[in-house]
Length: 125
Image (cartoon, rainbow, N blue to C red; front, side, top):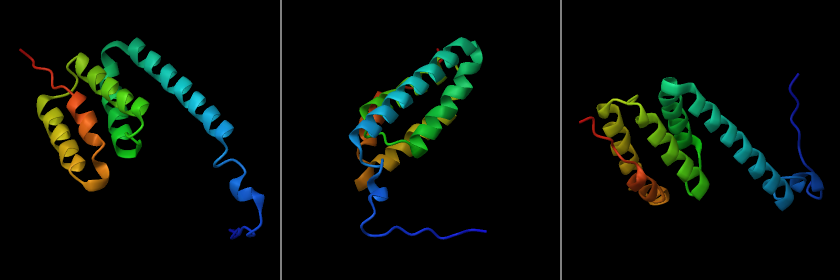
C-alpha cells in the first residue's frame, strides 16, 4: 500500500537536515573520502582503470554539478586517467569533447567551458 505523506506548514521536519550546515559538511567529507577510495582502487586496477575512469567521467558529466571546483577537477582527473593507457578511441574522445562544447554554449551550462578547456586529447604518435 502506498501512502501519500504530507507535511504540516508549521512542521520542523522540512528543515530537519536539508539546510543544516553541519549535515552538509559531514556529507561533503564522506563524499570526498568515498571518492578518494574509489580513485585509489582505480589506480590499483592497472590497465582496466581506463574503462572504469571513463565511465565515471560520463556519470559525473551527466549527473554532477561541475560548478563545484572539486567535482570539476575530479572530472578532469578521470578524463586524464581514462586516456592514460589509451583506453579511449580518439573518435570517441573527439565526439565527447564536441558534445561538451555544445552543452557549454547553453546559457545555464557556461561553467562547462572551464572544464572543457582542461580536457586534453592525447595524441597517439
